[in-house]
Length: 109
Image (cartoon, helix red, strand yellow):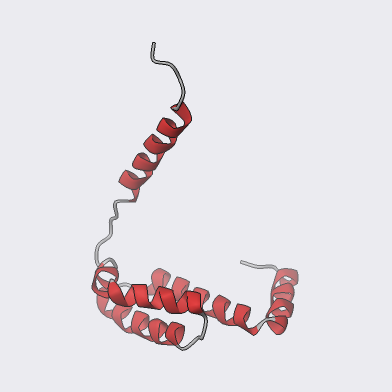
């Protein structure tokens, strides 16, 4: 949560750059969807609306993101019904790759 000074600074930045305000609003809406949607049915409706807003934002980054969401829409929506991910496995894989990269050049003993 932002303190009052940070909120004021954010509003000043938004007044200078409307694209930043739009991007922030879209980011906050998407974050709220991921935090509040309790089922795939609810996520379906909320994400469709977010995709429409992102496509109409005239921000190429969000338009690309919306197109990606459209491409994988069913998989993304279904993830709201499944309480687990493969994040732990991906984390271990990443650690292994980092260790291998750091060990490059060490001699075998």
